[in-house]
Length: 215
Length: 104
Image 1 (tube, rainbow over the protein chains, first blue to last red):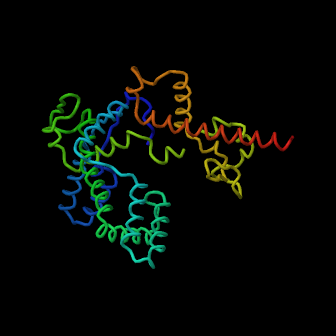
Image 2: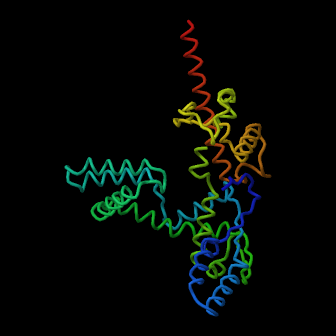
Image 3: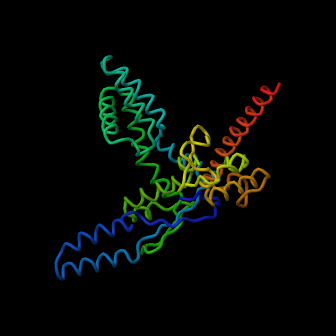
């Protein structure tokens, strides 16, 4: 992704269920069918992917991002960053795990936290998840933070979609805004999965990614 | 960032490209070692970003209005770039002071 330099830039976004990977998977499955069924299914897929829905997203400005953050906070949603989660997890380990095991588990947490997102070896990720599950069940402070994050993830993208969606193509519904935001009625007409993806994309456009920041 | 702020550091070893990296790390930037001359890793987008940042430092904004009307991601990036530039300048100053001490 290129960093949006100008707030005038609009971003065209196609949800993943209309992406080329999804199409390939569907076509592979259809090719296993025989005769007319196969032809019919392939034609259906071609028609579906010919005019995919395209969502037009605004580049969030400083002011718009602040307004979005305000509306997220107003719902009571809070985001705790990875550093805070790891620190709390370590306190939980010290509190609920037998002292003999503590050093080993803390080492796993440190090694996992030191990996880039999604780059941790599979075994390490499994061990980390197991520790997280155990601490979450026995240490309410960590369970609370995890619940906050889950709630934020279910609320913030929806509000981001409402704040930053500016239009759409190939959708047979009128795009309606009130006070600069997509109306709730309109939002309800978009598939829920699309709303989440649109929102996450808008959130991605608000700040440089980790890779960009490193660069 | 480093390539724009300290271009002379990357004038040598220009032959160390992503296709033919050096056998060992030659450059160190922000705690990371590089076998490829970092000037080969700079993208057009990054160079454009540096130009916009320089204009921003001179008081020019990308869009009409004030800072609040600018792309949030871009302003955040400027913050990161300011931090990186001061780190690079500090390193350079320390190196210079070290050299002066050795001379005296």
